Length: 546
Image 1: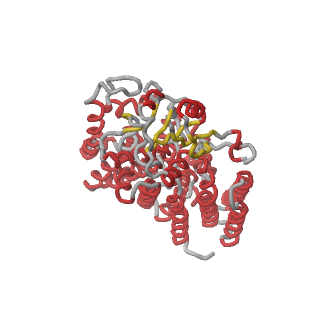
Image 2: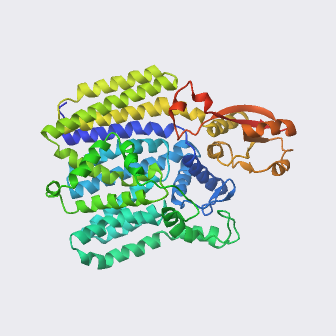
Image 3: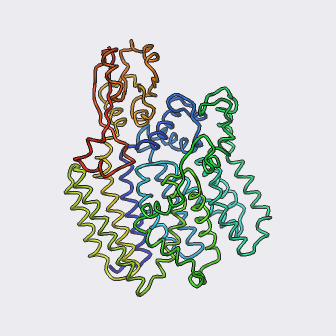
C-alpha cells in the first residue's frame, strides 16, 4: 500500500478511535466503575456536589473531580452508561493529542503520530474504554501539565498557568503524588544538564502557588464534609480530617502501608503488568529501554529526552516500591512508554527490523488464535461469526500491508488492536456483563416495576445495582432496620442467596427474579469455560415482602 507514512498513521489513529467508540454503548462494570458512576448519580439526584456518599454514608477515598465530570455529563445526557463513559473517552483523546504535541515539539511530527498511535492501540487503554476508572483522566492531565511546563521552560507565562491548571486537575482526580511524574522528570533533567538556576526561577515557584490555588475547590469540599464534622465515623474512627487524608493518608499512607487503606506490594508487579498492559508493543518497549542504556544510542537524541525517561522511571519505581498496587496505575506512564517505543521503532533497520517484523506478526497471529479459543470456550452467541471476523481482519492486514518496514509493523499491529476492540465490544463484554447481576437486576426492576423502591439487604458491594436501579437504593444492614419498612408495598429488595431462606420463612418473601453473578473484572479460565462456569456463579434475587 503506497500511502505517505504520516497519512497512514493518521488513518490508523482514526480507525482505532472509531472502533473504540463502540465501548461507549456497553454497560458499566463493577466494582470501581459502578461505584464512581453511582456516586456521580447521587450528586445529581441530591443536587449536592460537595458531599460524597456511598450506600447513604459519608465516603472518603478519592477526590471529587472524577465524579464532578461524570455528574456534569449526567446533567447533559441523562443518567446512563454512555454519559458516564463519555468524559473519560474524550479525556483519552485529549491525552493522545497532547502526546502528539509533546513528541512533535521535542522530536518530530512522525514521532508524535507514532507515539499517539501506540498509546491509543495499547491493550490497557482499550480496556479502560470499557472499565472506566480515574486513571485515563490522570494520564491526560499529567501529560498536559508536562507539555505546558515544557513550553513554559522555553518561555510564555500562559503555559505556566495551563500547566498548573492541569496539574491541579490531576491532583483533584487522584491526589498530590501526581506531581512526581509531572515535576520529577524536569528536576532530574535540570540536575543532569547542570541547569541548577531553573530550580530558583520565580516561574516554577509561581507554578506551585497556582496549583494550590486551583485545588481550593477540593480542599473546601473536604473541609466542609469532614473537618467541620469531627463526630463523623470514617474508617471506624471519629475525628478524621479530610484534608489530612487528601495530602497524606491517601498517598503516603498507601505507599508506606500505614494508612487506613492497605495493600500487599510486589516489587516485580509492574514489570509483568506492563508485559500485558502495553500489548502489542510491550516487547518492543522493553527492548527500547535496554537499548537506551547504551550511550551511543542516546547520542543523537535531544537532551529533553531525559525528561521523558526519568519521568517514567521514577514513577515506575515509586509504583513498584509501593505496598498498594493495582494494574491500572501503569496507565499514567504509558504515554512516556509510547514515546520511547516510537523512537526505537523508527531506528530499526536490517536484521533488527526483520526480528521485530517477525515478533509482531507472531503476536498478531497469537492474539487472533487466543481470542478465537476464548470465543469457542465461552460459548457466547455468534461465536463463529466472531472467529470469522478475527481471521478475515488478520488475513486482510497481511495482504494489504506488505514489506519488511516500520509502516507495516505499525499497521498490522494497530489493525489487530482494532480487531480486538471489535471482539470485546460486539461479542465478549456483552456476554460477560450478563453475569453482573446488579446491572441486570437494576435494569429489570426499572422495566417491570417502575414504581418500586429499590433496596439492598446485607450486601455491601451492589454498586451496579445502585447505579442502574431507580433513585438511591436504601441499604439494610440488619433485619431490625428492615422491619421498619416491611409494610411498604413498593419495597423491592436485592439480596444474596444466603439471605433468601430467612426472607421466605420470616417475611413470606416472593422471588420476582433471580440473577447469576460473577466478579467480571477478575476473569479466570474456569469462568471463560462454559462447562466449568456454573461452579463459580453466585446467585442474587429481587424479592417482594408480604
